[in-house]
Amino acid sequence: MLVRLEGPVNWSDNYGTRIRGYLTPPVDGSYTFWIASDANSELWLSSDADPCHISKIAFVSGSTNSRQWDKYPSQQSAEISLTSNQKYYIEVLHKAGAGNDNIAVAWQGPGLNQKVIDGLYMSPFSITLRDLAGFAGNWRRSDCSAANDWCDSYDFKQDGSVLFDDLHALVTSWLVGSR
Image 1 (cartoon, rainbow, N blue to C red):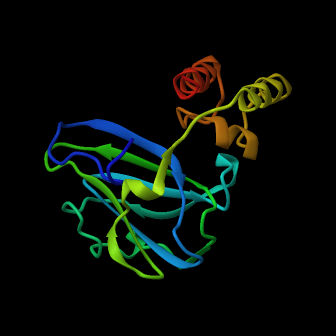
Image 2: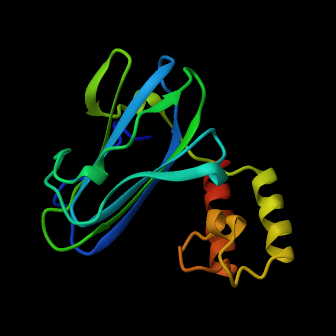
């Protein structure tokens, strides 16, 4: 479980990070999100708890210092209306280059000043048997050689096709989440 939606600083060079889980806002209202990172990163948020409904809400196409929220306009999301006690799937993708690696996500909303999202509002992502069954059925019906909504949501390697290694990643996540 994360203490906050933030990775280590100056941990290593040339690696990737994927943080995913559920965000549960404390009160109804409009929230704004920010992402800061060394090298490239993307912040994705779903309109509900379903990972299939995610959309990119902010990104860093260069690099920032740790918690530097204002270097690029793309780091800040538009205001997003969220409902209290409802889970929203959230995902952070990060590719660290050499030196000064960091990744953090902040938010601001009703009663919350801009700050890194506390783990209190996060819960782990877990895949259910229903997810696995849906994946297997769709995998058999689709060649995933061309981009489509189904392939995009299950393309764990983000390489444009859903193959056995993506199924392996889904099953591994499911097994880890079911313990």
